[in-house]
Image 1 (tube, rainbow, N blue to C red):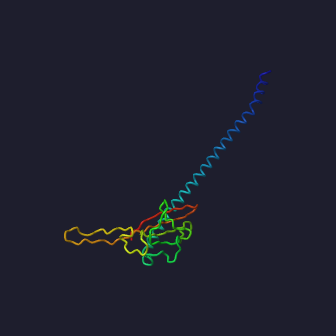
Image 2: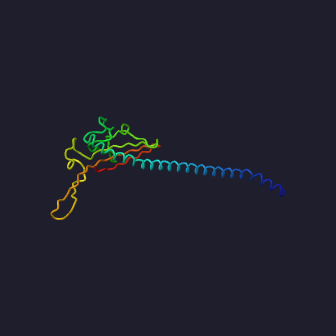
Image 3: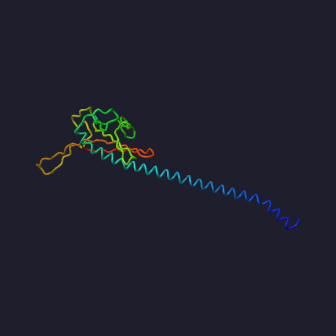
Length: 195
């Protein structure tokens, strides 16, 4: 066998192996590229969900401020009854006594599907419920003993012989605010007000 015959025999044996190795490398690179694309897509979805959650949490401030602004109206209209007048249990914006809560502190009597809501930026639905922190049955006759309150702190001069003044007792109200946003994001916050 001559030298050129040996070379042509080696070439014909090696041509198929190189092609298979090149194809395997291309498949491995393709799978790595697909994994990278999937990882990037997942990261974008997670980032978007976190952004919507943060936006829903920031929107709860609207509910907290709205609830605080309504305390005077509620106190004037129906301090010892549910508000608005005639609302069904679970659908009211105000309860004159403290509501029982679940393990996370959210009142269990609330039926969020019935509570009135406000829409912000056509994306976020804001709802709030106030409950006065009183345990006694209504009407509450003595807020000092029947309600959580600021107490009667003495203020004024400490000089001997001067009358000490007491500031009025303020009762605590709890606002539970719920915001539902895009991608079913939900935020629930609570705030206490002394009024």
